[in-house]
Image (tube, rainbow, N blue to C red; front, side, top):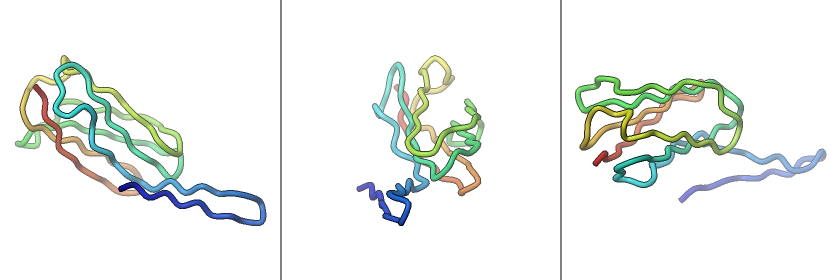
Length: 102
């Protein structure tokens, strides 16, 4: 369940976007997968994809806008199949999830 709050102020509506990392889709994947995340404000994001031993397989780094963002990951960019992990790091903290590569 995703919960979004919207507050009213004298100036109008102010939408709140929680900091959240979503499960990739499709999962498992064979060609391409999409990793989505919400940000409360524009900020720098570091997304690391790594194997069970902690070895980084791919890093995506950039400035992303407030609200929902999504990045794609190609199967050809990953040298391994099986269970791998992805972690997002921002000024708001870090979150990790698992995905399966065919």
